Structure formats: C-alpha cells, structure tokens
Image (cartoon, rainbow over all chains, first blue to last red; front, side, top):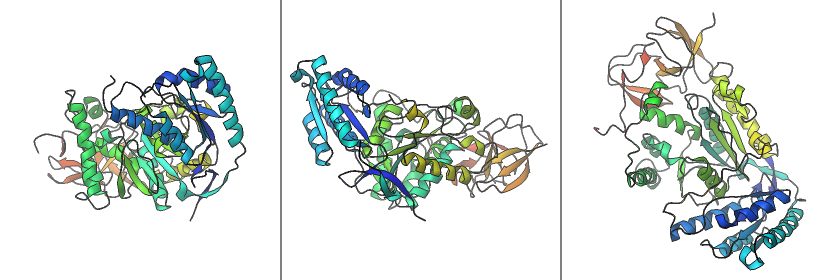
Length: 392
Length: 98
C-alpha cells in the first residue's frame, strides 16, 4: 500500500504542506517591525522569538542555524528577514542559506532604512511581492515518503500514556514502514527509560547511537545539576504516584510509547535539519513547547502530532499541529482546541489500532490542506529557540 | 450492568490499567487488549482511577510488564486480579542503590 499527499513542490526537491511567506526577525529587537508586516500582509507568518543578541558565540550560532533552517523548511515558500543591523546573529548567512534552496528571499535592515516606520513600509512592500510571487504555486501529488512528521506530548495526564501516545505510536510505526521520517524529542522524558530507547537504537545499546542516547540524557541531567537540581531524585513525583504511576520506568515508557516500536536511526542535535534521513530519529530537545515546536519546525517537519490529556492548545506558525487528546472529558470540554478524541480507547468504544487509523487519515487530510483547530484559530505564538548559555 | 474496563497495551503485558472510578475489592472488570479481545477478571483490592491490576500471576522477583517492557519487579507474589502499585512493585531504575 502506498499513500500520496498533495504538496507544494520546492526548488530543492522537498514538498511543503502549506505555502507561507516567513517573516524572520534575526533578533528579538526586530520583532515589532516584523509583527507590523505580518499584520498587514496576508499569507505571511512570523517567528517572534526572544534571542539573537548578547549571547555566547555558541548560542548565536544556534540561533542563526535555527532561523536559517526555519526559512528552509518545506512549508515556507519564500522568506523576508528583518534585521536590526547590530545584532549578534549572522543575518547575512541566514539570507544566503535560504537563497541557496532556490526560494525567493529578501532582507531589510531597520537601522539602515531609518527606523521603524520606514522599515515597516519597506517590509510590507517586500512581503507583498513575495506573497504574490508564491501564491500561484499549485499542489502536486507527492509520495508519503517525502513527509517528515514530528511528535510531542504536553499537558499530559494519566490518560496520555494509555491512549493518545499509543495512537501516535501507531501512526509513527506506519509512517516509518512507508519510508517517511519521524522525529521525536523531549530528552527529559527519557529519564528512567533511556535503556529501552538505547536497545531500540540501530547497532544496539552498545553501538554509537545507543551510547549517544545515554550521552544526551546525561548532559541534560548535568545541566540541571549545574544549578543544583537533581532531576532523577523524587521520580515518580507524589502526584504521579497518586495518579497511578508506580515507577520512573512506567512514567518514561508512557512518554516513549508515542515514538512507536521501530529502530532509532540516530540522534539529531537541536539545530540539525533533516536532509536524507529516513525512519525514526531522536531530536535532542527539551519538552517545553516554544523550544521544541521551533526545533521541530527547523528540523524540516511539515507537520506535528501532539498528544495531550489536560488540554494543550497551541500550534506553530509554519507547521500544522494535530492535537490528539487522550482524556475523553478534556476532549468534551475543549473540543474546539482538540482535533481527535483518543479517549474513546479508555471508554472502550474503540481500540488503539482503530483510533490510530483515524489519526492517520486525519494526518493525510491535514497534509492535503485541511487546517487543524489551532491553525484555524491562529493559536501559534509559542516560538522560541533553545539556547545553552547565559544571556550577557 | 456493564463492566468497567481494564486496558492492556501490549501483548507481553501482565498488568492492565483501569480508567473508572469506584472499583472496589471483589468487583469484576473486563480486561481488553489493543485489538479489542477481552477477558473477565475479578479485582482484589480497591483500585483508584488510572491504577493497575495484574492480569496474570506474577511471582516475587519477576518483571512487571507494561508497554511490552519491564516497569519494575514484583516485591512479593502477586495474583491475577491483584491491585499493583508501589506496595508490591519495586522500581529498578533511578533509585540510587542499584
């Protein structure tokens, strides 16, 4: 069985499932100008992050990489970079790298143009040109193997590990079997379950991928330890125990199950983008929404499947986010934010495989252009870049 | 009366999770696996919402399986239907003493 979706062909051979002009502030100080441009020009989205200056060189490189990769992602048809002029990021590199993909790209510099009002005017003119330029691109059939799907869970509760995460695991396995790419992250959640992930690595627990999995968990723990916090102690929390989780293994497994059962091909760094990677990959990213959603979009994921129990409402500007809700009561209360009710598994109405198949069909509809609920509501302000060092 | 459900995620699992309130000692529940195949089990102990029961006998020291993986080992002999939680399940990771 093969599946196709209708995607926007890009000059670099990728297929977008949305056709957007990305307005990219190269630094937090350019956000207000970028926002004004986005408000005026239909078909644009902005990445209003809070980084890009007064950071250590390694973080300035991370921010530059991520902004460049966001502009290169398949759902972006053209990009406008809004630079202040004195920022720490390499705005010229962002411009050159996006341009190298063959997409239309423009850049404006606020200080050079004479400030806010002149930059807004120049930016609106540029964004208008770019929107007109790409708006006639037609969707064409693309094999599902061209898809990169990202996975995340947030606002989890006791239902997540038994319903919504199992459903996403079903979809992840199916996509891997069809030759697509699936990326999951949330390194923090691997605690206590890293041995299980390492055993699923290509080459086994002792191979380079298995060892890398241990390494990223260890580094994450050390970062917490450097400010005096032991993340492993006290797991599972008293709240977890009251909710029915008996061990840290059970807690981690409930989170890991959303990655399905296929072998793990390797670990991507936070800034890495997918090139010819196929199969299941880990992205070394924290679990907090702004940072992981941004990281996954920068990976080149055209879509995200997001598991929740308490009801996390947010999406991302250039990546449709499908909300799979494990808690049937939350779904009823928040059905205008939740895309699929996986709580029917817990009430016995459906099996995991049945809801998994529904989620797969919803994924295909979303790829073909049907908006998710958070997309239709423009609920996608959670954008930020995960940095390692202090601000200075 | 319709029985409450106990859900088993993986075929290797020896516990199932109950998503219902008011499950008390001696009640029957319907254990269901991911394909929808079911079995009636009598619960031993009061089991809160989201907590687990054994769906097979588990000898002391044997792994307790959920999601097809070990989530700890039995700290005493566990009988089919028994409530399984921190009182009879011993974690094997992140304890600092192993």
